[in-house]
Length: 70
Image (cartoon, rainbow, N blue to C red; front, top):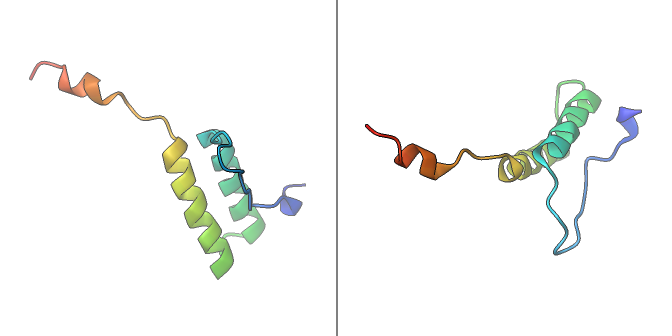
């Protein structure tokens, strides 16, 4: 049951980073559990998760853009 899942995941220092997909699943569960309206605490969790997701999301290779002919 998704509603019983915790959205607070604490990682030990040096632990591996979660994938963007894992974080995205947690964001979806948070919204589902909140019914579309976040409380103050849930909003803080959401902001933390979005930052974690952005850090984990794949980025296009920056060098590929600079090597293309103009």
